Amino acid sequence: MPGFGEPTVHLLDDDDDLRDALRQGLELEGMPVELHETGASLLARIAHDSYAVIVSDIRMPGGDGLALMKAALAVDPTMPVILITGHGDVQMAVDAMRAGAYDFIEKPFSVSRLYAVVERALEKRRLVLENRILRSTLDDGDELTLRLVGRTPGIQRLRQQIHALADPDVDVLVLGETGTGKEVVARALHDCGSRAKGNFVAINCAALPADIIESELFGHEPGAFTGASKQRIGKLEHADGGTIFLDEIESMPLDLQAKLLRAIETRSVERLGSNRAIPLDLRFVAATKTDLAAAGREGRFRSDLYYRLNVVTLTIPPLRERREDVPLLFFHLAREARARFRREIPAIDHALEMQLVRRDWPGNVRELRNYADRFVLGMWAGFDEPGGGAVPSSVSPPAASSARPSESAGSLADRLAAYERSVIEAELARHGGSLKPTYEALQISRKGLYDKIRRLGIESPERLEE
Ligand SMILES: Nc1ncnc2c1ncn2[C@@H]1O[C@H](COP(=O)(O)OP(=O)(O)OP(=O)(O)O)[C@@H](O)[C@H]1O
Image (cartoon, rainbow, N blue to C red; front, side, top):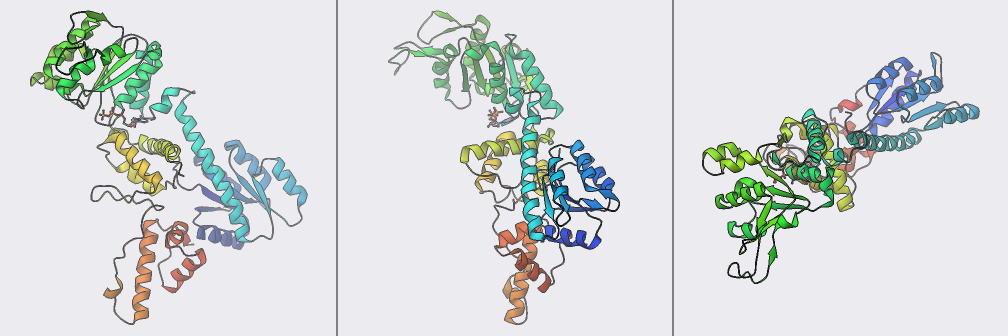
């Protein structure tokens, strides 16, 4: 899967000087650029990584820009190709546009003109990628893949199991650590099957006090206990015709476990204060993050209920066992956050993606979702625990400098220069040597940053090196 960072600008021109000047101009704007002397090398590159924009001269001694463009569009018809035409070469420009060029630019041109065209093309490329990733999660237009996002084998298997279990009326036990998506799976089971017309009723057994769970689940008749003035229909009855989801089933009090087992086996419920059994047609889906067998051995969970629930189980792997899903999920959750908060998604660069993948995510998708929300709200200043360290460029405050002005020796001018230098170096390091986010964060112009880099003798960031 391509990264979500910047697409690469592939530049092909037979004029060495022009090529280098263009590269420097675009790199100063923070665009990743790769130079090519031949169309063949360019095509070989994009065959492996088509997350790219092409800028090519149309007339070259060793090749033809139009032919190159056609070959590139054969690799990926959505690839933006910008062709450089000779002055007054109107017919050539028209032909290029007809043949599918994204735009053309007439010689002589300024770097800023090229930058403007490439910037638009990059934007288009990003959008195409976004849509492609989302569509690819759909796997043949399947609704479930948009809800249960992930492409790792564990998640693909889970989706197949959900489809397979959607209609047979079996009860299901969902296993997974906190925040892995157990409720998502339970809802998917409900929505994919014929019970979708009925209610999906969820109850978290850990969230309610023991004495309340009973009447919540089973309902009660008036006068069943002190304070029960009216009849109350319980969650099990509400779920009649649909699905009851019993989350954190391990927290169910032992005496209620026996009553629940009876309800499961007899498919009926007795409200508190009544002996009348009300027949139910519902599916039980229970979920737990603990080892119920061990809880059974320790006397905390009834073994008979465990065996009854454990007939069909679905296991959701934790995020640390499916790290490849993390960028996709983060992107999906950020898009959800964008819709919820009506904010744009800041750029997700490669460095951030790597940090997301490396993290263990003890709170799983729920924790990832919190970070995606904060990221979109511009309120993420790094991971919570010490050493976590991801600091998305667009939301981070300027780096605290290691060299404070008072620590450097010499004149006021020297000390200020040392301080300025350390601030810029820290900011450059924070952005992986990329200039654009650096001068934006420092709120100075591109030229201003470039001048300071030269004046202060700051080591050229990698991207500026020849
Ligand atoms: N594969 C997934 N794709 C998209 N969103 C997901 C996925 N898995 C989980 N989520 C989202 O993560 C959050 C937590 O999911 P959910 O509440 O289902 O977890 P859980 O395992 O039931 O949590 P708990 O253990 O606390 O009961 C929800 O916002 C859910 O929409």
